[in-house]
Length: 204
Image 1 (spheres, rainbow, N blue to C red):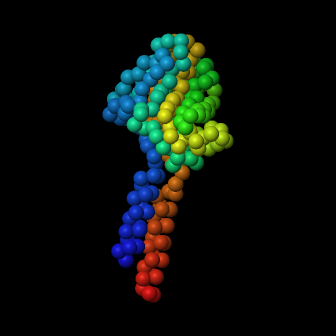
Image 2: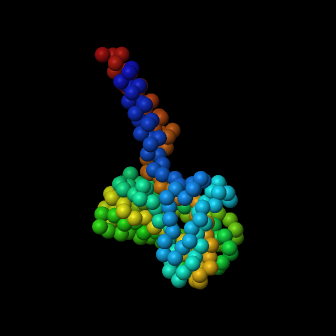
């Protein structure tokens, strides 16, 4: 039984470790994320979805971006088939008339893939948080996705949403989720394997 018990614990630990690769809630600080290309960023402790959030303000004619920290980069192969999601709020009510808002660039392995994962006219000027998501698949990102994810060196989201230098947008809950069995499925699998091992031990 010791062997099967150890196997079950290993399976459950693996499921817990990979069920969600990373989620950045910005509750306490910016977690290393930073603005570039003419964006000014501050961390706001309350008012997020929920908890804290990042507030980005347009301060130049460039299309400002939100960048992942170096600590978040590296081998993202486990994300193939998984999901990217993030929340955005139009804070000051500027018209969402910049169609490239929500475009994402991922660079790695000497290549770059990009996808505009947000429909036009977003984020709406309604003072509410909105969640946008996309799957990590070749239909969305192109044939080079696996190569890029094997060694990610840069991850950027365009937060520019207005044709002018005035918009203020909030960003919260940037999440990278792996395509793995749900925890309940992992538990059932582990119990099944443990039962098989126990029965073999009893009949031997």
